[in-house]
Image (cartoon, rainbow, N blue to C red; front, side, top):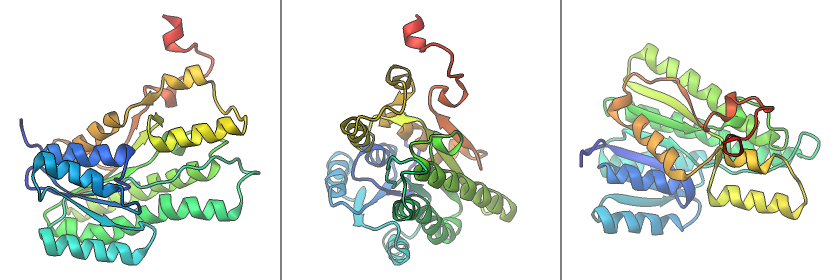
Length: 267
């Protein structure tokens, strides 16, 4: 099998489960050394699984609070000391909370922003100099379709993901102007079949809330592997001219008029 990421080093945040874990596994499969970070020690199990499959020095878990500036300084210093380079940063860590503008409070808003948006700034700010010094590379920021269309029951989450998109555009243009061979892009999934999404869905159900047509929504939900495949493309040299893009992985959710029937039921 072609090693699309041979000799590359990648950091993946929020790698204990769901999309983050799938990202780490797929990048390792294609030859990258992967550093998994998470506030949860469960990421160590993912790292152990990767090392068992691809070699004992393929994956490294470092516990990290992505909203802490010092944790990023320490992480990049550790990466440089152990690997001497950094080629790929996947800002994946995020939390999801449902609340409308009248239901959300300022503490909830700040918590979402801290984890989902501040962390992307901190990670990009800390990692960019090392990626540039390594000869260039790829910064991949996980956004959401909620960044480009209104989702009233996820007001803080949508705003945080829109901030990620705006930051990414500015970084992409900065890198292009500087000519440092670093690319910065966002991925915008709709629903993903992950533990986090299922936990939110169960919480909504317990509260008796219906925020969407379930049958229609299922059309746009993808598996974590679909996101990991997109991350792999953006991490590889195959996407060398893709910079500042907002890649939707949503089966057309952001462009499908709501009055159209569910595609599966229309067949």
